[in-house]
Length: 168
Image 1 (cartoon, one colour):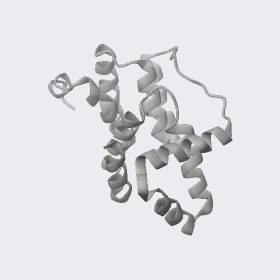
Image 2 (cartoon, helix red, strand yellow):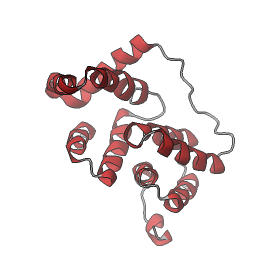
Image 3 (tube, rainbow, N blue to C red):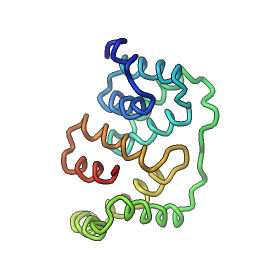
């Protein structure tokens, strides 16, 4: 990313681009975007939440690398949330969030995923839409926009379509 391109970004553009740069393992782009987002008033909490959520689509190693880079810019990483998990509440929140995003397609989604993996179906609600998408620190819409960016970068077309609809 050229510095002139970064200068033209709107504040709301930073988080999805940061997520995509992290997903693609573009460390120098990620660093440049973090530097500029810091100057543009993007909070460390928003940056942390965005990069933490990336593990859903990019895995733990990617999230660990990008959060380590974030730590270079925010050595203390204050104001980040470390939640104590009540798994029943997470599952309830996951169902609520998933229904909000998928609407009348919710039952079909759960049935489809359940047909090839009951565990993954449960994890989708508990982990994805409960523990991660249900966290404080970012709106559900912002989280969906971050997901769209990562899914686009990684070319996961089937999931991308669903998350574009969810962002709307």
